Length: 78
Image 1 (cartoon, helix red, strand yellow):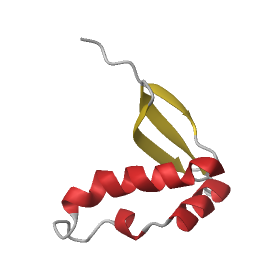
Image 2 (cartoon, helix red, strand yellow):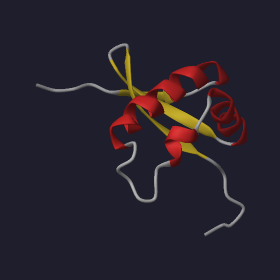
Image 3 (cartoon, rainbow, N blue to C red):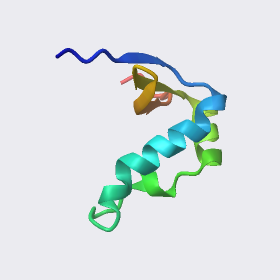
């Protein structure tokens, strides 16, 4: 069986969805990672800031969001 995934740009209007994805992805690791993941500290507002400073991609399987990746530009060319 082949799984078809679609990746597309995230927009400010996707901040709540991105927050939910992060919370679901890291909930099973709560109290288990040392050092702990910062994903649990993210808020919708902090994600809106990340989107404004860089961006994100959302990965979907059919109409279901199944993952995301955040990115930000760096001043260092290396």
